[in-house]
Image (cartoon, rainbow, N blue to C red):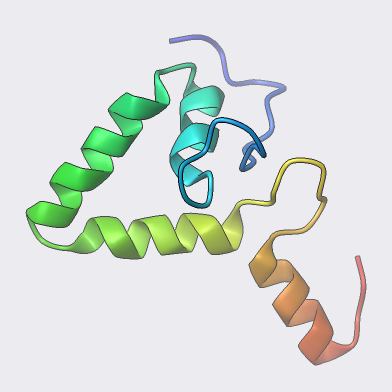
Length: 83
């Protein structure tokens, strides 16, 4: 595994199947996105937490080219602040 210093955890626009969480984690940790997808599937089958973790990643990871995540945009729109 390579050093993750200097990398930004984000959901890429290319190479994703659904929301890009697995592709983003794969890029960040320098592993194949399909391995991350298999891990999510196994965690989902054995306990169901994979879906919740994936949704959290979708909310918290900004999309490529964006500075804020979906959660940050929701919070900022409710409070009336911008980053």
